[in-house]
Amino acid sequence: MAEIWYGTEEPAPPVITRVGWARVALRGVPIAGLVFGGLAVLLLVRLVERPFYGLQRPITPFITQFVCRGFFLLLGMRHRSIGRPMRGAGAVVANHASWLDIFALNLRKRIYFVSKAEVATWPGIGWLARATGTVFIERQRRDAKAQIALFRERLAAGHKLLFFPEGTSTDGQRVLPFKPTLFAAFFDETLAADLHVQAVSVCYHAPAGADPRFYGWWGDMEFAPNLLGIFAAPRQGGVTVIYHDPVRITDFANRKALAKAMEEAVRSGLAKHGLMQAAQR
Image (tube, rainbow, N blue to C red; front, top):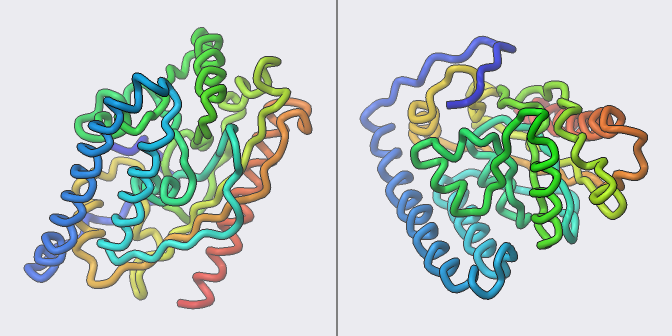
């Protein structure tokens, strides 16, 4: 379940009609086949990939990207991107609005999510996260050295690590303050010299006539009703992913300055494309 955030009242779960359930089946069955079939292929390929390449994954990320493209195609949801994903290893930070973020952010950029350790124990989601190379961390200060060592190892393997600095998901209509503590590890002398960070804005566009928060998943909202409500919708909207210019860690005095700059970049992308959506509605 999404972490608790009390910024706005949660909408009531949608009432799904018989026609809506038909849409759930027409969309859900092929999507489930794609996701779990892709996972099975990924795990089989990983059995061969891992002994030869270790942490490096030259093949399996392409399977993940294929699944993400197919997901949006089968759902009937538009996906577009603006800007250029960063090349090479580094960190990526983005706003967090929905479980759909996983598909939206993986579609074009080969990334590895950084998540709180308890996600690894969640039924289904934890299994998928582990299979796709998610980095699980403890959020305690006493674990800072272990986190730095883990980040250094993954970055050395050429990975792009994606963080959600808000610390929780929202309704997709705003960006919460970024937590500077999440940026502290970047300033370790073994990482900072060559590390770049890219801000990414994820902007969801609700279907025509729907609540602007249609794709948001936050607070005490349950996963299943949210997923079923999206699958049952008569029509779908879209998502725009905006890649901002990467910055060097060494260009910032400290973690607070970096967090503020990244927050402002993400917020500017959401504000711009949110206004564009409002003008089109």
